[in-house]
Length: 295
Image (tube, rainbow, N blue to C red; front, side, top):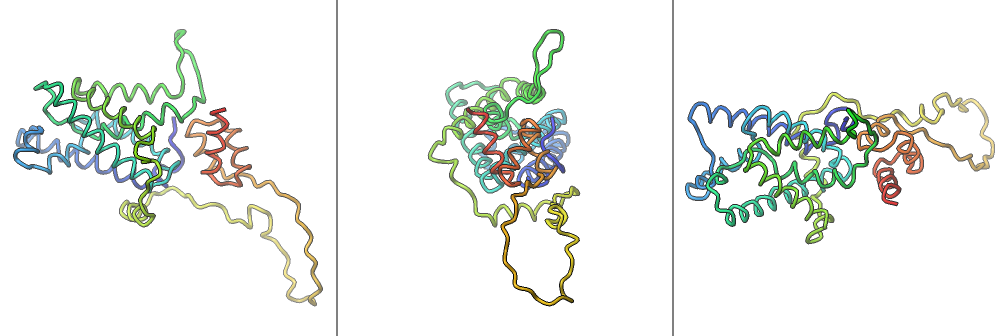
């Protein structure tokens, strides 16, 4: 499954998170090999080693976890493109804070010594994103393998299961907390879905992360509408002009916009028609497709 055109274009928050995961995973691996470092909640609470909490929030404990986690974060960038970076940052903070609170309460109730070690990686964020993935991304392709039914979403679920069982009890518990957090966000707890960061914060993330190589610029309007060869009238006398209503023109949607909607799981023809109705506005076209899917 593709998560959208041009890599991480228009997803600066996701880009920063993926880069942070890679960097902190390397730091975590070096610390563990050289100093046999173990991350536990006792170190954070009693010794006030806050840096361990920061590293564990982004750094995975192994390379396979990093591969699956980065793949899921990369795919889920479609949600940042759908709701905007300023709202997506709120979702990231909400999922991180609330999943940590639920996780702490679960540890207090279970009192299992095996669960006191910190589970490294943004499990709360990743599994919170599975909630909108389940409800909001429709299935576009179905197929059978040995009489078993699969869909294009199956590979994402398999990657999630691999990550969920990577640390056994600890990852299962934290993944479950993430799913509960995503459900609370979907239920609009405290009207959270209406909160968003100012646009200058999102632009800061865009500047902070390096530019991508993809070309997200739209073709010039003149070449799209066939006005690039308009004749010059500078040598002619000016005549009275009476405007005539121009016939309605159907603008062909940009291929990048169609690819972005197809990556979200929508049918290509339906995406094209929605973009025509929305006059090439991707956000409006997404709302049209979601409303038609809900009916």
